[in-house]
Image (cartoon, rainbow, N blue to C red):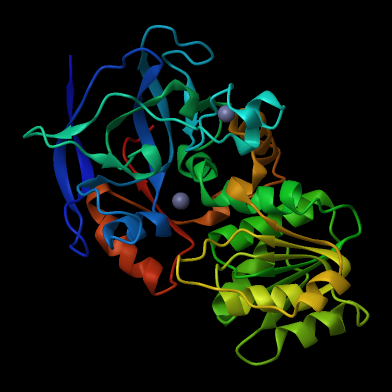
Length: 364
Ligand SMILES: [Zn+2]
Ligand SMILES: [Zn+2]
């Protein structure tokens, strides 16, 4: 039996999103039907609506979600009806060359549900990042569901599905931050603030937040930044050196996705230091560096896919840290809104007024 539910759809490039009735099939083999409780509004949803990711309209938006599994299809193990889950967009295959060599966080063949959700007239929907969770129910691959402690608040837990996990992992895993390290984080939105929180959990003693917006630098302090640099007023490379005995930071995390910012991160690190690139660039961007500086400074330049996180390993750990009061996920939730509030939330996000607006789909 298929389910008719309300959902947020982007029908055409650049047009405001609309709340529509969609049809969600019952789960087939390897699939799970999830009753969505909460879903965060991410820049990536806006990029879909703007046509910046693809042209496969209509898109079913929403991908930072938590909810309860309602039903699973045949051959599903590891998740069962009634489980409280966080959805992820990297369900690992277990058989590709990355998975076979024991590095499933790099899985090269992640997958989604096989069956399609549709508009009421049968038009197939493209779910954002293979999830589509601004919806009362959604259909995903069972591997996209990670069960976690149900004591967590869905509005906060769902944010681990995307940007917050990318930032935490960029610091804790890709950056390999160790106790006593100095860290500089460029860009203090949701991903950057999560990187600041991750640096603190990993034991960094100097955590420098860099942004052009004084308001965002205030947020960064709340997440654990020990120093702030307003890059609209001072040269961030000079400022970071001044805060690190003239040396530069051990780890610089670029959470913007911009060549000029990457270059600042490159030059703001200490010799043999690490640059982590977690901000997502657009296709036309280029970086140009003196090759002798690349060689002469040593260290590592590391892109970070999803923070090198593995949802099955890391979501339960992050939720434990949250429930212990050591990771303030609630602070990322700037406001809660209804399912009809997504278009307005996009505008607040564009104006830099919120870290995350979170759609409460179903009150717990
Ligand atoms: Zn794989
Ligand atoms: Zn996202």
